[in-house]
Image (cartoon, rainbow, N blue to C red; front, top):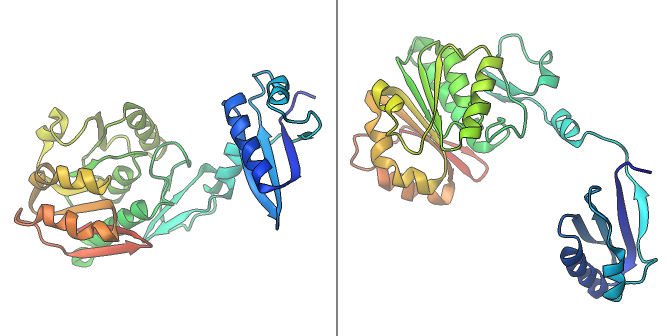
Amino acid sequence: MTGAFRLIATGLDEETARRLLALIGETWPQAAVSCAETTPGAWEVAVYPDASRRLDMAALRAAGVAPDLFRREELPNIDWVAESQRRLHPVAAGRYVVHGGHDRDHCPAHAIRIEIEAGQAFGSGHHGTTRGCLLALDHLARRDGGRYRPRRVLDVGSGSGVLAIAAALRWRVPVVASDIDPMAVATARANARRNGAHGFIRFCAAAGTRHFLIRSRAPYDIVLANILAGPLIRLAGELAGRVAPGGHLVLSGLLGSQQSAVLAAYAGRGLRLKQVIADGEWRTLVL
């Protein structure tokens, strides 16, 4: 048979299982392998070879592994990427609902729907930092009885583009979105087109906020930066400098334990903490 399969050895003691794990790693570095205790004292080693490579059982025999230790099991022919996407449910954050294409027809009619496929780039809506930023945008949109409207929005570290798309769909205003990864920028641009937001968003590949596109449209009434605590601290001067007077800076990608250090980097820059959104161990700060 030419379909997917695995080689499995069962009923092993822990020492044998761990020795096999090491040998397989050396013999078939291209294969995926799992090692687990299935019942007390009984271990299992399963190998998922790359079917394009020859299975070099001779090498394992030379290392002292009995030829009949493994048995072959055929695996069902499943598109695991499609299956994983099917199992992901839509994510609601205020009026926003982020969903995959398989849930396109299962979102509330009143929702602002954003279609993002999982795994395209960071930002499918399932991570606490993305949800936190979406909630921050939703809270801002409800200011002044829903009359709040920024003039321009900047999204630094845009990943899949979900936050830039969220701002564009909510306010129909110019948005600039940047990411250090050109592939992520290409993905975000495609997602913006899929969601009908491409007419409002300009994308660029950039580290920080010194790209000409970002500088030429500054300042921004909302600046979003869903990155990590380290870059948030290093870019404090740049990010704060892109916020218009009276504007808002939304920071995410940090843990609760990192909140004080991040806030310290922004102290004295004319911004004060207005809101903290917690999602598990993750924090989103609105300044």
